[in-house]
Image (cartoon, rainbow, N blue to C red; front, side, top):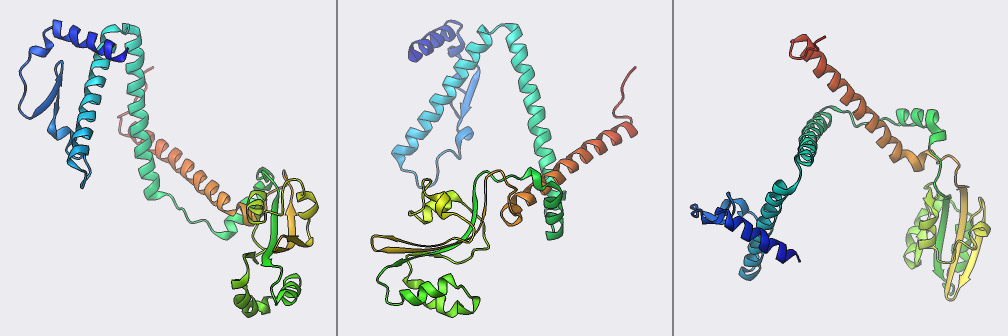
Length: 282
């Protein structure tokens, strides 16, 4: 169907004698009064591309260019004047939006302060804590997955459930024997991460296992899971500061950007009024 329509377009253009024009130097194709030149696709083919693939890429580019030219010419002939005015207005507005957005982004990039102090983060969190609800259960925990026949199991289990920072050398030595482990229970994680790291925890048993202060040993075939849940925050409760900290920084920086944009817009307008480049006639 598409080929049939294109054939009709080509015949229509031919009947208007548009294809009787002479080839221009360096041109590789023509549609109506539009020409495609070699310079239009000099950087099209990446270095190292085979000759066969290069030819195919160039041919596809030429075909695409011709199809677009034929379609736009058909659209300009067949769309109503009111529709063309509507679309031209949209194009004009899009150009304005594109240019102003790019200009403001560049100005903001060069000017905005992206450094946010810990004090500022904590202050913002305290004032807006209610706006940062957890989307799901958050957990602080530590765990080990170990072979149930490990000869040091009793010692490892005792030290795990009576965790002491002084045992760092012990853990550095024996952690190489663990299949999985995580000791940093000051970090908040979501349940999806818990499920992926601990397959013995699932949505059906999570309420039994994921409780603040819970200590567990779960045997699964040859694997023994040692789990200690330090703290839990349920869905809809305020997200903890440590978990939401990166988001807080992003929010604060974005607010600075918006304020800077408003300042730039006001200053450029005020300067134009002052210099009599902008006037409102009454």
